[in-house]
Image (cartoon, rainbow over all chains, first blue to last red; front, side, top):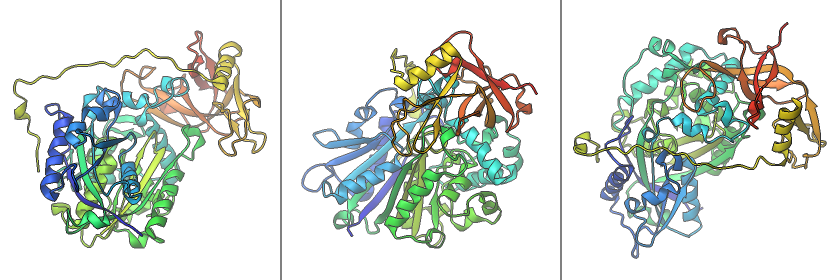
Length: 381
Length: 157
């Protein structure tokens, strides 16, 4: 079977409020980084002819938000461009399909999101809900997560201390990651007694407001070695949508993630993820989500997320060595930062937070309230 | 690696903005009937799939399990039910309809099979319990939304 490679990645440093830099400038910086590393060009016989972007209209406060960035992603001057108006990890599947179909052989993919541009990301998430059943109740991703957190905690009996361990560990790893946002070190008590944000979610259970941009170069197997000596292969992809109405889901079980993971593992030929996978990047916007998504991904038994933490499961499977969402990543491109991290780990270029012997990484991302839509990618070296 | 340093922002400025776009939205045939029933009759309606017996509230035109057209199969649900889950909203924000802290709960109405989200009021957050019975308190003024039920309140034992 034909393969598609991620040749190289570039990450912009994530900060809580990069007010002093346009997102166009952030994109230009990572484009130049990536061109510097790989030597790729646009147009002509061998250059990139098709560009993929990911951004959000509401965060950018303009519709068709990709129009604002076409020059700094190389799409100006008569090249194709598509926008993934969905969590960025889905763009990996799109780019892979584009290359496997033979339509293109090299794709430049860049995403950006500055949550700080909005007075409140919760107001933006409120606009994701329909006008008369949910939006008028004030629903947003935070209070949807509050409902899910309680459902998950009731089911699994995960303890406040175990949830605090997730956050403390995220900050420890973030301190080793050049690109991570929030590196302030915490102890368990800081998390357990932080102010209540949306009960049972406390303020330090929630990911910090984040601005960032991330880019990567994807190529067919035939072309990949023009840009890198050690391409990383996309071997699995799957996504799955759950019901819009939260009452019609099993909030504590993440059926959509199980199905997305099933698809991705099947494509990658992974029968036993616990034996095959040795690095995970999961989109833990809130502390309870890390163990919950790991259950959905099959890394631990359903309902046993708390035990998994006690048994050092996150260390065993190298979960979120980047710091993950809990150390701050923007919505929309959290999954793409996960890909960037996994690619560096697989290439052995993760510097201070490099894990040993990584050869199969799984990246999960989600969007919609309380994990409604789930995406899973498998990368191997 | 290119880094971002804020000293390059000397003599630069930030432009404030505000998006406010008047718009409209078709409530749909089943949505209109559902809201009109709340508004005019203070009755909460659902639709039942004749094939798989699923009851949907808010209503759907088609059963999402077996694609059966169900929009003529209305059932009247009770105005009381059980609280199956809740969160306490404790942060202030402009999109929130109530003064915080307020409770968002999931209410399983009598006769329904899945809960839906609404506001729970008339009880202190620390006294809320999963499994407690709640009843719909209808709004005095209509908004033509689910807020024609103003909130759910505990049923007096």
